[in-house]
Length: 233
Ligand SMILES: Nc1nc2c(ncn2[C@@H]2O[C@H](COP(=O)(O)OP(=O)(O)O)[C@@H](O)[C@H]2O)c(=O)[nH]1
Ligand SMILES: [Mg+2]
View 1: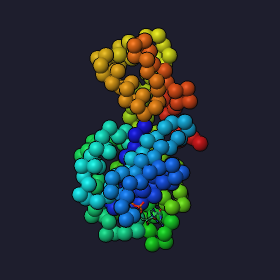
View 2 (view 1 turned 45 degrees about the horizontal axis):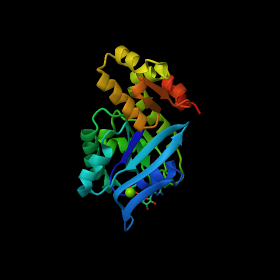
View 3 (view 1 turned 60 degrees about the vertical axis):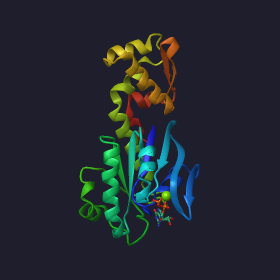
């Protein structure tokens, strides 16, 4: 799946992607500030997670729009220490909610390893947009809580797509898989192929559309059938 990591400058987006990918990531930066993007790949229970970190300076809005396009989930990173970043957090949240309406989002209340960090209930008072969102007290530096935050987001994403993903699992390897998918989900053929391509790009399945057939990655199939498995580790 594709996950965009966004939030204000200095909140710890690059550090978060570095931690999640175990360092297998790139950061296009100048003098310590991300100017284009971070990108990395993580494997969680054999599910590929493509992470895209956005530049946190206001003027790079177009880049953030491009990187956000088609994201399945959002990690919104806030700085738990610096109250001066709160105003920027509000602006960035409004922006991502506009780019990706309805896309599942978890909030990383980052830098909780520092004694001066604000607890989540205090952050909720300062940042009203957090209402209704799951907020995780995390540290990109120590890794505290990062794994459960990521797994929760993956669960929310799979639940959002559960009707489609469940059918993928059901008809994986079937001779007339595409036809049955199209019929069950009441789709046009083009739409069904669009869904297959979307999740093929995200490395969940392989498609042989000429043969009217698709195959879900073996390791991923149990997760598509039962997304809650991603939470049990
Ligand atoms: N103590 C602590 N420092 C952090 C944490 N996450 C990031 N930082 C530091 O905060 C600064 C900004 O982090 P960075 O990842 O570049 O933020 P970005 O602008 O959102 O990409 C850097 O000096 C990081 O080392 C954390 O969880 N704890
Ligand atoms: Mg950065």
